[in-house]
Image 1: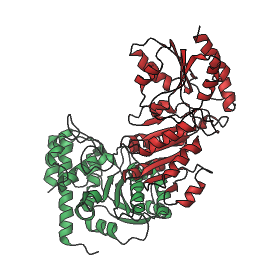
Image 2 (image 1 turned 180 degrees about the vertical axis):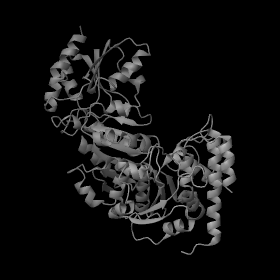
Image 3 (image 1 turned 135 degrees about the vertical axis):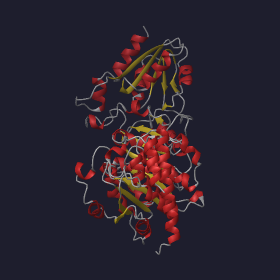
Image 4 (image 1 turned 180 degrees about the horizontal axis):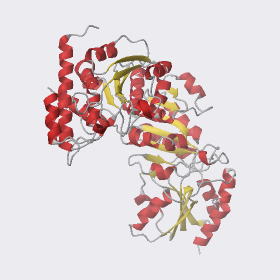
Length: 268
Length: 301
């Protein structure tokens, strides 16, 4: 597929606004997970800007943020896209707000699957994709998982069973930033080679720079061959804010007034 | 009763297209014909319980009425968080068919027993929980599950339980009086109802036996009305003494005024290490017919 510069301008603008929204929510709530949210935001920018079919809501494509602690990334993108009212972000994760720290599908339009415990949304997504196939429906399912999340046994159960079901309507994007809550996945466990492992399970595997919108779009939309797709997006945790990038502490650090100011100056 | 429940679900597939059955590598002899006739409505998702339950939630989200079949530990214990987060928290119409209620599988060992399942199941606010006593109650529970828009859990035995109801129960959400009596009301769920009925025969006219097929939500108002007039209420259950029907009734009794005394016969809250058949276990733990009759006798003063 040829990707137009207009398309990339759209997806990049969406991701930029989402990143600014993330800083806003993290600052307002004085809560954690800002690095996590910034890490996968280009995935969401590409999906919401150029991939997901959302015009007919009843037959829309489904996006699932399985790494539910990245909730700000989803809220920030939904607000930037106009699916939720941006004013809701002011009370994100605070008294009398509507947006909890982890995802609740009954909270707002656009949160499709509740998530927060890792290794759930991926498998729920497989069930959805399977159901759409059985229903003769061409709806598609896109899921984002984290590389810490990849340590969950349930992910490997899903990997083991999905390719048998012919779910070429299912795409998972791995946010491979090599930082989890308390260390680096590559140091904590035998993480690599991820691509070879997943390929051995019978998946259609692609590996790209997870901040390169054109590469992401190409990987997502490449022709299907009857298999579920697993895209490894090489990412940087805290992407877009220099002092947060690839820093373990920004899994939990609080965005103070000063940090907010510095971050927003960079996100332009 | 296991076959009755499953056959009721399978029969309904002739009338509707939204039913899907997932097995976690269990059900040999139960789904053999069906899985061949309707391979598009049956899937063995193997020995991978987390994936199986989340997958069921996803299918339900897309509009399927999903039934997940496995032994109790594998639909409820092993992947409790999938039941909690994916099915119940998200309010999806998935029915968990748990085989091997109570000590059905004795003497296979503790890993296969289901004697604390109600304690767990009752922590999930919107989970409808059934413990049928016989094939008639199992069929009626299946019919509820087929139309319910909430998650359901059904614990079932599979040892050829006899039908105990003279007429099919009209409503399994309410307590059902099996035989009337004026002194002691025995409240029971599950197949141990058969033992209770035999024990009660020795005290004809004095013992009222009440079956409670639906454990949650528990219709305590109807249970209180059903025991009216009896000074002693005895709960008999093949479940730990903590967290089962007896605990729920005790909780209600502690916060309401009632003119009956509550008594409980249940399993001790301990891991089972003794090797016995189900009947041998009931004898060992004092849940056999003579033990139940003796307790009733003592309550009649």
